[in-house]
Each structure stands twice: as C-alpha cells, then as structure tokens.
Amino acid sequence: MKKRIVNQFFFTAMVLTLMSLSNPNSADRIVGIWESADHDMRIEIREQKDHYIGKTVWFYCPPGTPPMEYYLDTENPDPTLRNRLWLGLQVVENLTYQGHDKWGDGKVYDPNSGHTFDADVRLVSSDQLSVRGYWKFVWLGRSLQFMRVK
Image 1 (cartoon, helix red, strand yellow):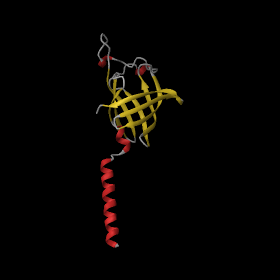
Image 2 (cartoon, rainbow, N blue to C red):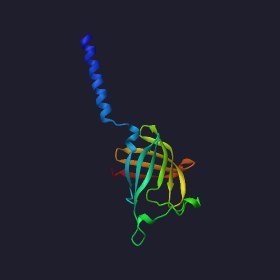
Image 3 (cartoon, one colour):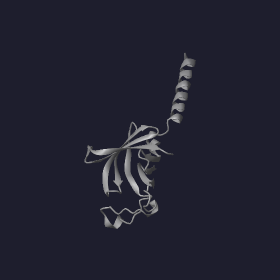
Image 4 (cartoon, rainbow, N blue to C red):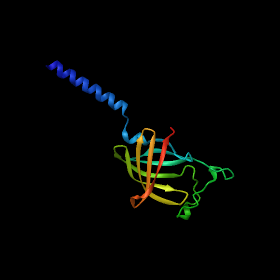
C-alpha cells in the first residue's frame, strides 16, 4: 500500500512537471511580433513590469509615399507629440492578463486618427490574436485580427 502511494506521488509529480514545461506562462503567450490580417502592419508585444505593451515595428507605405521612417504622428491631439515617428511608436499600453487567454484594461492608439481606445485582446490560437478597440462600451468598437510572425 505504501509503495502504491509513493508511486502515485511520483507519477503525479512527473505529470505536473511535464505540464509546466509544455505550458509556458499563459500571460506571456501574447509576447511576439504580430501582423495584421490585412498584412499592412506589424506590432511587437512585450512585457513591461506587470503589463504588456506594443510598438509598431513595420507598416505598409503605398508606392509614391515616403518610407515608413518619415511618417510622423501628425494626428495626435497633443501638439507636442506630433513629431513622434510612427515606427517604434507605442500603440498598445497597459494590457493586463485576466486569465483564459484574455488581456484587458489596456489602451490602443490609432496614429491614423489620433484617437486612443480601450482595448481587450484575446488569444484565439497560439498564432492568432483578436484585438478589440472600443470607446466606453465594448459593443462600440472594432476588432482586428493579427497573426503571429515571430
């Protein structure tokens, strides 16, 4: 009987160890580079202290327009921020992990309009992210899909 309990203990410990190795910290599963479904933008999500942020690392520039290194945040409502470059611009801030592959309480910034929206993010699969930007109420918003690049 004692041997059976010891065997069950070791078996349980082994299973838990294997599960922890195969399931990395769920909150960090959002970390990486994500490309929009329209293939016109890439955002790098990373951890910063106890929350997650995202910066623009690439975006599409139509032919005949300046290269992305020259685009400025001209639509920003704060005139002192209008000289910031789009490239490297923090467009996602303060996302906190809420469990079950969901991050919330964050903000997303749209440099095209200069507006900042509340944000909820859900990991649909290990390689697909759904970002919901909204104003005051979740149903007053829009969702964008992103695929993992790296």
